[in-house]
Length: 103
Image 1 (cartoon, rainbow, N blue to C red):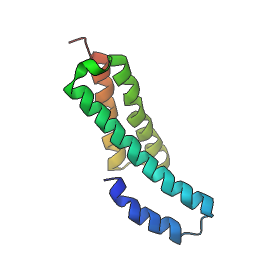
Image 2: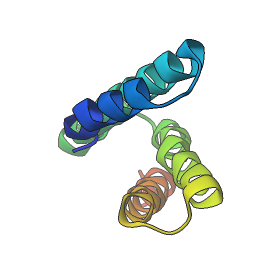
Image 3: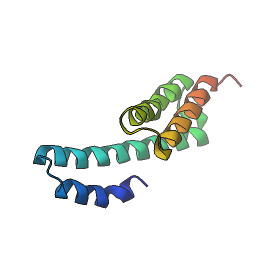
Image 4: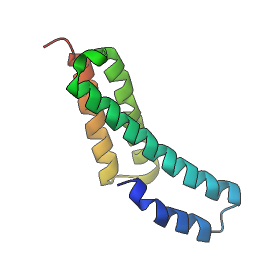
């Protein structure tokens, strides 16, 4: 979903009066966030299928990425659905990491 919105972001950044550095930075950061979320999704899917691939502490630490992202989204953009989804995914992943091996 995030990557699908990139063309509109690119158009808005190009049409803005931002200096080139900031316009290009926005584009880069937008795609960097997309790649990060895709990689996290793959990691969590692999651990869900094969729990022995990662220790619980590793899962809990990796879960801090979506939690931190959600907090930053709330701080700078306010309340909206993507932040809620990241918060939920991060919290559930963190709980899974903490409970990994304890059940």
